Length: 462
Ligand SMILES: [Fe+2]
Ligand SMILES: [Fe+2]
Image (cartoon, rainbow, N blue to C red; front, top):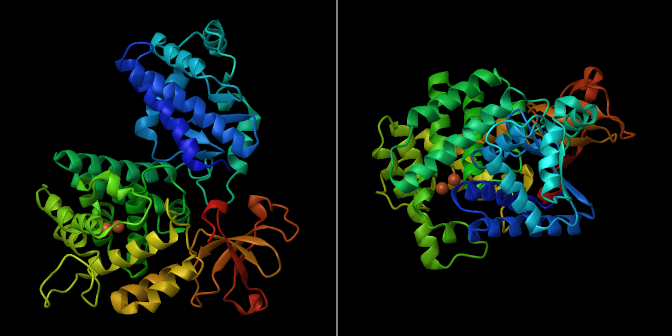
């Protein structure tokens, strides 16, 4: 797989270039910077991967790369998706040798075509006339079998299979957008749509229909966006899932999920240079970051309709059970169980996610760390979390002792023996979807079979 940060550079250069060209004249430094960025990112990407082309697709109004939706890039990506629609194209094929001037020519075509062209051939002619030789417009994917196949075949490794989650992927996207927009508004001091956050969680609960296997596959999606946004979405999903496992009522789950989405909203007021610093923070910087809990609660208190639970979670999610952590409180203050649960999800997410400065840990390693400092967490919240997820969280891919590969469907009573569906035979051959056997590793019939390995995405391996 390509280096995600370079792919992100390339996509963001394209999208920002389109936006700048709408605002500025041809050859404006802002536009030129973006053209250069795209050409440079492509060169680096192809150099690393040994390939000679990079494909960026668009389908169902969203951008795709390597068979997966680029979740989180919607707001930025919309202009590119719209351009491809006007050009009757399903994606851009960028070839080795691409020059910044060719990217600039694509930006020109975008301002020239305010409405749809006469067809794909007419669009291709527009690029040819401008001597663009290293950008090729692909046909819309509905027209070509191989692309559809490509989408459905690439669901290994925990990404969002672009073909399979037609209902859930847009909900994940709207969770993402909710956090993204909320943080943007909090940064600029405008009102936050707290009810919108509740509405998104409500739709999630409706779509998930009681099954969190698919949702958790989304949780494991290695996102291309600022990780605070993906982090908040994953914390919300994990909290809702554990809450549901504990038998909480839908109304409570909605408040819990909204509190998860908003728990780090105070980070919107922390300078990005500190928030996204890849090296270690000094004492002053750590103090600044720790302000986000108090700031988040303050921001939420100023909003119409923010629930006390969300305010409490924003304020207290770094306050440990043994009273270490921050912000400072009175010794008699206790955390609400929503705050305790969000805190456990917060730490687990941070440990198991990839960060610029660290790889992901497996859930087992994360549990070991958390259990070793168990005084930090509310024991009930930690127990509920571990029993809901198990050692192999639903949605993860595992290798069985016999060599078969399987998808985990649910945690079992024995944390190491989940319910799984076998997707690949020991020979490595994929089993057709309709024939995949479901196996309860907790049942006596499966006593001789165990999980040998948790399969992680290569870039996320511990
Ligand atoms: Fe936080
Ligand atoms: Fe957090």
